[in-house]
Image (cartoon, rainbow, N blue to C red; front, side, top):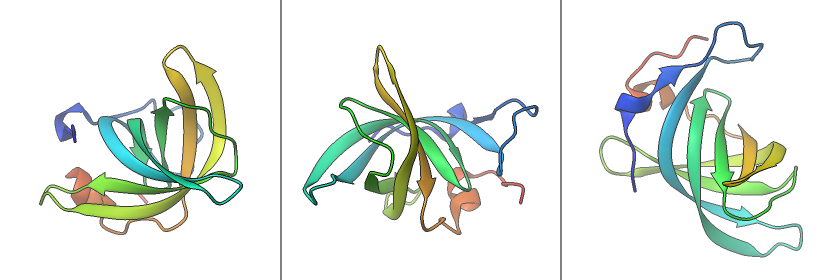
Length: 119
């Protein structure tokens, strides 16, 4: 799993967001649950993260409302699992870009990213 906290940078202050968002490049494992209840493990490319969710690119199409269990790597080498829902998506040359909202916000996210998230 490729993660790097050195590539975390905050996005523009002028954006209207509930929580500050940081660019974060990492490879994540996600378990996708499709509308028929089938589950599939998929590798996602994270592009940004905030206290409320994350942006990622998937190699296949996903729809708004689809649910994932995401494995967020921690500095200790362990994985913290969170539930997320696709709240927006668009197609790009590199795959399906998704805005995902955490259903259960990781309380230790600021420590995990080794930066302080503003409330």
